[in-house]
Length: 186
Image 1 (tube, rainbow, N blue to C red):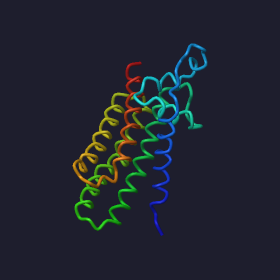
Image 2 (cartoon, helix red, strand yellow):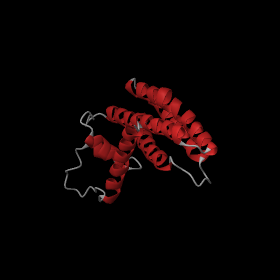
Image 3 (cartoon, rainbow, N blue to C red):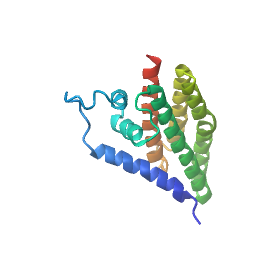
Image 4 (cartoon, rainbow, N blue to C red):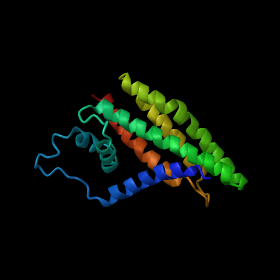
């Protein structure tokens, strides 16, 4: 029995979401006033991936539509879910591979993702909840560094089984970092 099916389905949902976002025309404010009152859209327009931000926050029934701090928390929680899923996926790949070099690269990535899942992102969420946006920003940047370190382990390699997952993580982190920066700047 394969345990990687839930991990794969979570990842596929994010890939499909990203694919749909990229094929959907970008919203523009044409002065009709419809988007002017939507704080989610206003905040997401200030992030590097508007469509990703907007779709995550609009699709989450718990997303507070008028609270930027709550929106930042939703994004960090989404990163947490994605990182947890990626870590499970890495562990499954380690079990399945017979390639020693690939196993070492994957083990390095697991060691990069473990602190992200267990410490860094939970600390970021706590910091946001407590209004400590500077520390939250630091944590998010730290999570980004860990994902980048994993990604670099495969540079120049013909096998890069985590590149799509790391790319999604990078985009999610970029959105969360932008929202936290808005909170920092008032």
